[in-house]
Length: 389
Image (tube, rainbow, N blue to C red):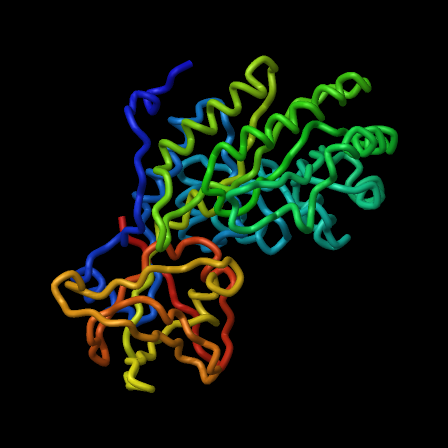
């Protein structure tokens, strides 16, 4: 079936774009201070509805690990988007935003007993496993759980390989499905993740083809599966452009049709970054300036221990924007964070104008794997969140 999204004639790219302008940033900073993370409810709704429109028939479970902030979870709950969690902490954050545990998906393949018990007793029933040793936890503490077997999948274009730590080899899959069945567990399907920030949707075609082979091999072994969960990987624009969400979903839809279009499967996705990354913009301000060895240095009020933690843990490269930058003379400079750690450097290779102390900067695409991994090192506060429509 051709969707409305497929009427576009040529692939389109998208660049990082802030969700507010500098005039709005000044008003918010004067009221709330900085650093400040600004989330756009309308942009979040747009992303979710685009996925729904361009991938009809796919159920989207927002990956809370990317950003479990209340404002984001609450907005997605209001839109009717279910949530994917990996711990009781993420589950409780979702409950606080209005979600029902019975509608959640738990995707951590190797859980502590306490994690499993807390989530199961709260009402979560759909869980992931990737090895036989995990089955004993389910039979003892979550006997009525429904299971998805996570497969390890490689990707040529993903920034982070999420199968380096988790996922069963496809060649071992049927044996693990049989082990779960023989242990008395209800195995309902397969899951995989091609990797974070997957730039080419063509990688999904390869992974889905491998998953379909496992699906067919399981059927031959007497195990009828119902669910295919193809995870996340939807990319976001940082300093490099990526395909528009529409174009990306169109390609994913084709891959799904080619691999699973002839079976009556429940299809699930777990977008995190693709849902929330470009819905948040950081407002940060210049605390100090200096010239060191001929290079301008600027100290800003957020850094690697804060929202820029995505540089360390997510390999992200965030674009830094100054007001009227296109009309000001720019030069290479260094931006460093506010802590006393000399390695707290945000960027060394971006060109910016001569910045004044107190000047505001905007950093788009700050919604995923940024504040989620921030800490209070040096006793500094983590950037607070505010909403805009």
